[in-house]
Amino acid sequence: MAFDPGKEVQGASATQQRVLFIDNFDRANGPNNLITNEYAFRNPNDPRAVRSPNWEATSGSLFYKRGVGITGVPDGCKPDRYSQVCNDSAVFRLRTRRTGFKNVTVSVRLLNHSLTSTSRTPARAIDGIHLWLRYQSEAQLYALSVNRRDGTVVIKKKCPGGPSNGGTYYTLASAKSLPIPFGTWQRVQATVQNGQDGSVNLRLSRDGTQLVEATDRGTGCAPITAAGRVGVRGDNDDFSIEAFTVTTP
Image (tube, helix red, strand yellow):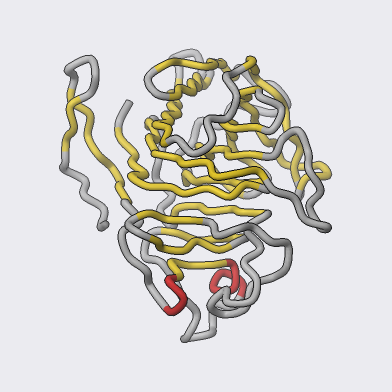
């Protein structure tokens, strides 16, 4: 669905929020029901690569099925042009093309089918689904983990310089959560807002219940106060996604 800068929605508190971006993942963009994949990202000069107007998949593949977006059953090998042989969704990284998201709430419906593993990506405690906020680069962002193999919810910041694709993760807050509700749709919300003192506040909720909150005052590096991309990360996780919406908080 195209970006609609003027649409408003009614929130639970009866206050109006302006919709900045929405995608219902309601159609394929190419063969094999593909919306986009990392092949398109890594081969920008291939005119037959499948590209989305809204998204870049820096790793993995996103498909369309029965009105939602799906990762497909994750594997650990690099995809071909249409992800017909491999999808690489064991390492799933999906970010918006648009970069101007600052003080926002990301709301998305998730259906977690199962956790997986491959010979390339053995099972780890951090496996699951994570939302990105203030994504500046793969080395600088906020990551909010909502479905993790170890049953925790975590808010992290990634700072430039270090062993994780050029960055280092710092935990800002964590809490024990309910087990992953496999086979049940979840409504997940992640909010980021700048404070007047230069800090950044982050909150993560599931099905209307706040799970964890953090205030970043400079852990690891300066708070990420600039606008950036938003997105979804998956690790060894077979899941579906719909109604990805970005609003004013």
